[in-house]
Image 1: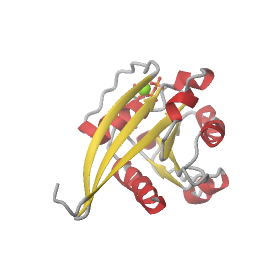
Image 2 (image 1 turned 180 degrees about the vertical axis):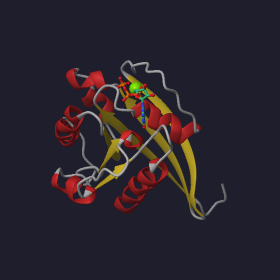
Image 3 (image 1 turned 135 degrees about the vertical axis):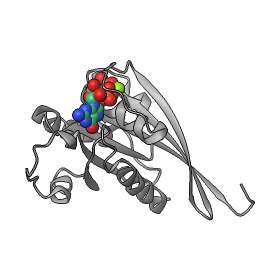
Image 4 (image 1 turned 60 degrees about the vertical axis):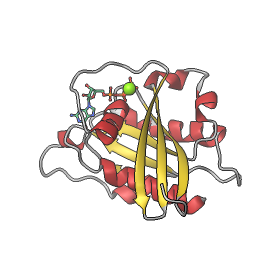
Length: 179
Ligand code: GTP
Ligand code: MG
């Protein structure tokens, strides 16, 4: 790193119901791998990705992969501390997981905020878009995200590597803009 470069340390939370694909999204993003087999995360897992964001900026992105089952636990307040952004993930094929994104958003808003007191930026990912029947239409995504209080919303597939980089880049842009 040359002397004029600045380094951003970003703690980003990844939350959402059981089995929606949080771990798969992180594995795809950080290691470009994907596995069909499902092993539920216990508690929390971590992953780090270092990005040469631009000529002047290195981003050390720390992803906190929080188990879906933690929604019913009491640990999230601890896990959320000092986070500067979050991804809330749901499974396009399971309506119930979309219903819970509001609860995840409320959980985040009630337990973590930026140093200036404003809410952290949160992006909604509707994952497993590879399972959409061909030709099916989705409601205007951005509008839907805004209605639910998210700064943005993306259709993603960890399986086919669709929109993962784009969505996370959007979040990092917001985090850097907030600094
Ligand atoms: P918890 O750790 O229990 O909270 O689940 P999770 O959100 O981490 O889900 P995980 O990434 O383990 O994925 C659950 C299952 O969905 C696995 O069998 C994955 O292979 C599958 N899966 C994940 N992403 C996709 C996707 O984009 N498309 C399809 N078709 N399957 C996916
Ligand atoms: Mg997991």
